[in-house]
Image (cartoon, rainbow, N blue to C red; front, side, top):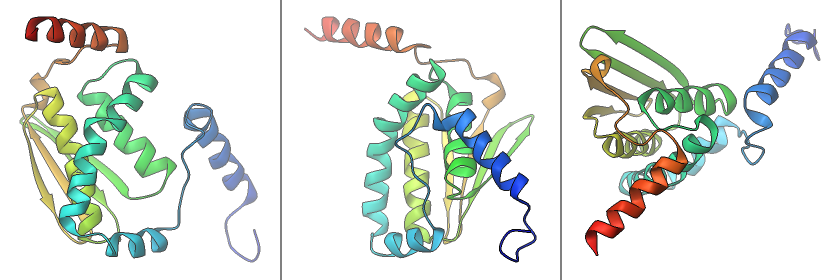
Length: 177
């Protein structure tokens, strides 16, 4: 027991070690925060502001992180990032994923309000847009649902590595000139 709670020290130590091994040594700038604090912060952001922040984050920062960590940018690495960073490392939400013959669905359950759902939804949509994948979002006060139809048929549509991504950008600039 830890301070009168039924949680064993071994469980806490194992969780801390697992976080460090899986993510901490690579992303030492990430911090976890109390969900109650996040709920209060999200309550001061309008849904539209949250959506703008999420779109910008999905277009830039998350793509850079995925390319750095996974060395490729595809739908599986996007799903894994949402699962590991937000769901397991930061405890920002509970991540659920379902697959069927028609596609994939992720559900991010949280207690932070509609602005948080808008932020997560916009981030995910921006990432899907960059991959050329169509997604349907359903945002509510306590969850964000994203459905991707035909996800089983998808291939990597963006360059797999950062080197290939940069090469593609230089080719696009040459064509535009």
